[in-house]
Image (spheres, rainbow, N blue to C red):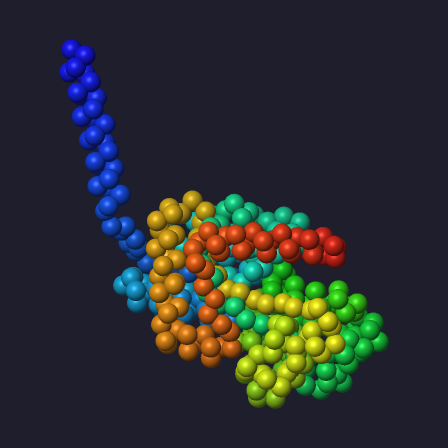
Amino acid sequence: MRRTMKAGLLFCISTVFFAAAAQAATPLEYPTRTIRLLVGFAPGAGVDFAGRLVAQKLQEAWGKSVIVENRPGAGGNIAADQVAKSNPDGHTLLLTSPGPIVVNQSLMASLPYDPIKDLAAVSMVASGPNILAVRNNLPAKNVKELIALARASKSLLNYGSSGLGSTPHMATELFKIMANVDMVHVPYKGSADGVTDLIARRLDVMITTMPALMGAVKGGEVRALAVTSLKRNAALPDTPTINEAGLPGYEFGVWWGVFVASATPAAVTEKIHQAIVNMQQMDDVRSKIAAQNVDVAGSASPREFSDYVAKEAATWAKVIKTAGIKTN
């Protein structure tokens, strides 16, 4: 009797083991339907460009529709919240800049989602510097003159951003702190509207992505004073960095990355990650990203990107606390 029971038990264990092995060997059936890729900013911003490029290449790779949905507002939080609370099956993606992930949790009194617990990092897509630009009739021809003008004007200058907690917002706040100046913040629902007002001379200053500003800079509609990286950008070789132009130590970059709801199966997350890695090797993708004056910036794994995000969040928490910056 004992031998029979033991044999039966072994049979059951072996059956379960081989069934699990067979299931694990089964190809991942993802995606199974249309994918939504949410972008938390209005069309025309650099993050929107990255979102549409990723959507196009995922659609080509998988043969499933990938639809970009712009959900601007609240510094990118609206889109991030929707993805955080979406069905965690990988069919709802977030393409975002740092704000909703590493800045807003420290900047704002409360968020409807926890960017670290409710969202899972998949991969970085691209990164690059921002441009510090002013309206073309502002009596400041360089960074030192802008700082002097801002100090003399006593908060009369204004600056635009793509929303509370957005990358341009934080870049300018960092500039204000380091330069010991004050300017009035004018938040928009996306960089494009801010650039429009900068061109129309309704706005004095703006720090935002190169894709959003390059057209206006090249056309002479606004004046580029500096770039935010520590090295000059090849697209603007005669434009100094803020660091070398009068504010030593200033550095700020922007990245765009893909996230999913945190409970998304690891196999799905890895498949999305690999698809992004594959697209980054394509000549047309690299040329399109270079044309936007940013660089391809991938992640070796979702874990690597997750670790990077955690470090960024800690860095900005310290900066925001030290500066005493808060928004409602």
